[in-house]
Length: 339
Ligand SMILES: [Cu+2]
Image 1: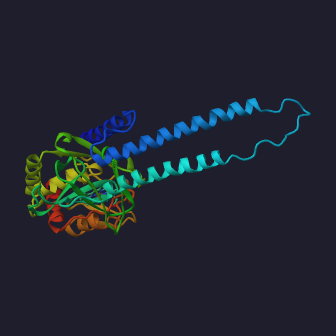
Image 2 (image 1 turned 30 degrees about the horizontal axis):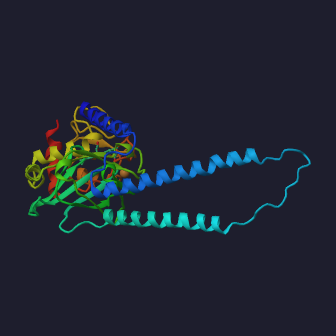
C-alpha cells in the first residue's frame, strides 16, 4: 500500500512540475521547435491585431459619439479601394504563410524518418504498456518484451522511435508535451507517432493520456527515460530475462508489481479490488451469493474476462488484462506464493 501511495505521490510531483513551466516545456526536437515558432508567431499576431482593433475601437466610440439629441447621422466617406485591398491582401498573405509553415511542421511530426525503431504501445484503463521487439541496433528481442508504466519506460537517444499504438478498451491519447507530439490511441485500430531525442537531450520526459478515459485518467502519466544506446540495450536485455522467461514465480511477481498492485494488496488490506493475501484455493463469495473456489480456471477468467464473475462487495472495476499463457501461469505461481 505504501508503495502505491509513493507511486501516486511521484505522479503528482511530476504533474506539478509540468504545471510550473511558465510557457511551454523545452522543445526537445527540431520539429518541436518549429511548432513553437508557429505557436509563438500566431500568439504575437493575435495580440497585435487584438490591441490594434480594440484600442482604436474604444477611441472612435468616444470620439464620434452622438453629442446632442438633435444630431443626425450624415453620409461619410464610404469607400477606400486602397484600404480594402490592404486589409484583404495583408491577412491573406499572413494566413498563407501560417498555413505553409504549419503544414511543414505537421509533416515533420507525422512522417517518421527511415529506420525508426518500432515500439508497441498498448493503452488501457488506466495505464500504458510498451512492447519492445528490437534493440538499438535492430536485433530482434527474444520475445515481445512488455514493460508497464509503473516504472520508467526506457528509450534510446539518437534513433527515431516510432510508437505503434492501440487501446484495449476506450479512447486514450498519447501526449508527449516536450516533443509536441500527440496521437489518438483507438481500440481496434493502430495509430503512430514518432520522436527522436538527440544525444544531449537524454533525460526523463512525461507521457500523459490526454483523452479523458474514466476515473483514473489523471494517473495515466508515465516517465519516458531517454538514455544512451548502450544503456538502453543493457536495460532491454535485463527486461528480456523476466519477460521472456517462460513460467516463473519471479515473472508473476513482476507482472503483479507492474500491473495489479495498484488495486490488489498483498497484506490483507482492501484496495480497489480484493487482497491477494490467502486468495488461492479460498472459497470466494460472488455478487449473487454463489460460491466459487479460487483455482486456475477462476483466476484465468478473472484476468481475461474480469466481469464474468464479480466478487461480492466490489465494483466491476477491473480492466481486462492481455496476458499470454505463460504470463497467466506465472500469475498462478505468484498467487499460490502469497499466503
Ligand atoms: Cu487514458
